[in-house]
Length: 292
Ligand code: SF4
Image (cartoon, rainbow, N blue to C red; front, top):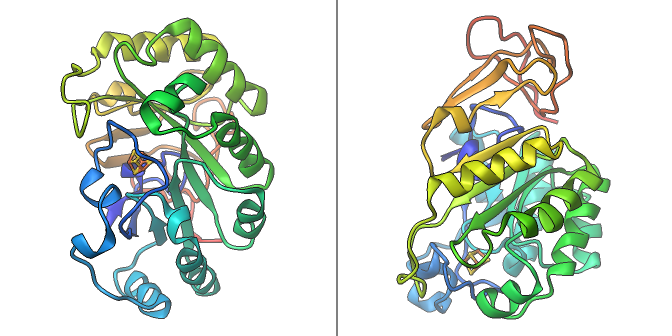
């Protein structure tokens, strides 16, 4: 059971927990992969357990989960299983979440519409970055899928891991990530996360926090409404601020979450905040929790 904020999803059932699982393997070979011990090895080398789709859904219900997160490696590689779990989970009133690299066909996306509620999609870098660091995928497929997931009414948040010297140029970030997302909707929550040396990129230093702060300021200046820093552990950069009056409306720190909304509105100025499934936790939070 993970906090939903760990996916990261900040505007989807904030403050709740979700049953999370993976299988071994991935369709990418990111040199920085933090989950390489399950994503880059054959399934027979990973301790695992057989769990049928009904058993997975029973587990979610037993643990009081809001649903099932298909996560950690790339869920598209076990798509058929995820869908079988997802359809059953949906029947039981639970939600389904994908944490994905966004690299799948239009047929998969068409099928997802039947059962998927939310996705956090990585937009990792430009075409050259995908060639050099990811292992050769076409980034335009990822951008197309972000747009199409949003159009399909699936809740979308986007994450970019910033690696010093690889994808930390502000001009590139403005043109390729911020302008692109804003053209879909400035309400898409954007997570800018800090790189730590791992897997085959242990010789690259961690991202300076100032670099991330600068990119966040840039995204806000350019009109994105909800921009967060990941792997920084500073509540200032994890809090949701009202895009109209600037008041903190969802406070977060180390997975502690306090929702201060009235329904889906800022309690101070009445601005609608783009958030799904709010459950009030304290103070003037009032909204009931109700899975779709
Ligand atoms: S897509 Fe994610 S899980 Fe797959 S190799 Fe890249 S970072 Fe690892």
